[in-house]
Length: 137
Image (cartoon, rainbow, N blue to C red; front, side, top):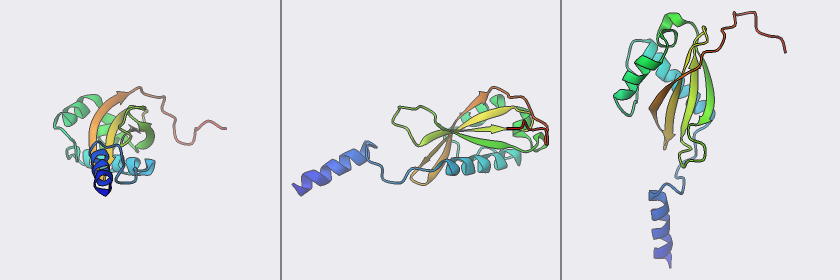
């Protein structure tokens, strides 16, 4: 009986149906996105990209204001799972925007303490709001 129980646990772990680590928090995804953008804006390639094509896609999709240091301060917004309902809760999106409202979405995977960039997408720009002119609530 014990052998059957252990075999079942091993099977479900191998299929990813039992989590072996606690899921990452939204702040973990934002922190990793900040690390990625620090490297990119420093002139280095995207760190921990799962495929070299990620860099090529980023270079064509990400606006210059996001890629370069002279684009101003960046904002980071955790969006959530890239495919809600799929069995991939560890892959989540963070939208990175420059001061001019241009942005890019990074699909990030954090699983078992390992963080990777698994995708990039351009996002619609938003109107830039000058500092000190934020709408009143």
